[in-house]
Length: 435
Image (cartoon, rainbow, N blue to C red; front, side):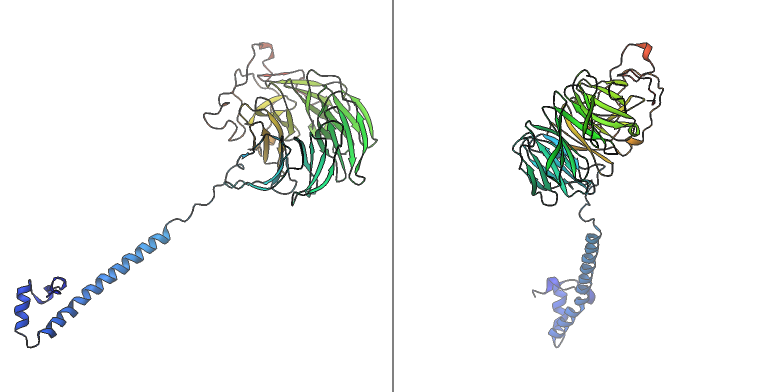
């Protein structure tokens, strides 16, 4: 009778155990009828099993329809990269999404960068320099990386593996400060004493050596014809050197403050120099002796400068702001980004011109989208606006709401006679593009 609780009696019209016993007593073979009752209840069990299978199938289908792991987020710019020491120099590879960074400890790093979340990857690092790595540059074919250091040495590294290909120890008598690659065979170096050297890789030695500056060489550039090399110096002058004829041409007149950077602008017609006093000095090409214009930016200094187009340069300052500035007419267009309160050491532009990278004393390399900055057109005439906030030229220009510079504004002046000039800027020019 232990089976009775699990047997359905309703199919036989039996409602309790007593009726079942009475029913079986009247039969000649009760076990046969009991067996028939069990068989009758089997379909009910099969239906239950079928329902369970359908339920499991539905659950399986629901699991199959559920979303899998989330795809990596794609950002507007690569993520910031943090280092253990302050980075002095950054350089982008000419044909791959790779950049190099050198820090104050003398270490050199090679990274691949990507807009995919957490897509940046360290490829290798090198600790060959004994002191701070001051400047770096990739060869035109991207196979070698050149670095110069405070330890007075020049290193050439294999980009693929990071191995040291060539070391020039005691390349200068003073600490090296700047580097410029001219072509596949020639490069120039400048040191803290103001000495300029030109090197030929085929000879392995310097073939030109000139000391015309009284203080360190901060930056160098060269024209498209690879003929005239220009230097900016801490003595407040710009130097002009004829590489083709291997001779020194002239020094510009002395400016107030140190010249920290030099760039060729306006399709080769103008030269712009940044200074430690926050002033941009402009020279006419072939008129290097005296400035044709000067432009005071509301910044404590202009420590580095990088052309984005023929008309626009980005500048990095001791206040941590990266400003986009139009040359003739002279205007601060806005801010591309910032390292809050940290002096910016160097700027670099990616191979496709989309990203600007910056390094500062906060031990970070940051990336900014400048793909649209170069196409900005500035009107010659614009009515003055007082206390105008710097225009954000990228989504990350001011960071979050708690950013230190979120409320940064350009200071206005009370001089109503200059209402046609941009607020927070003083220029000696008539905003023309003439020579």
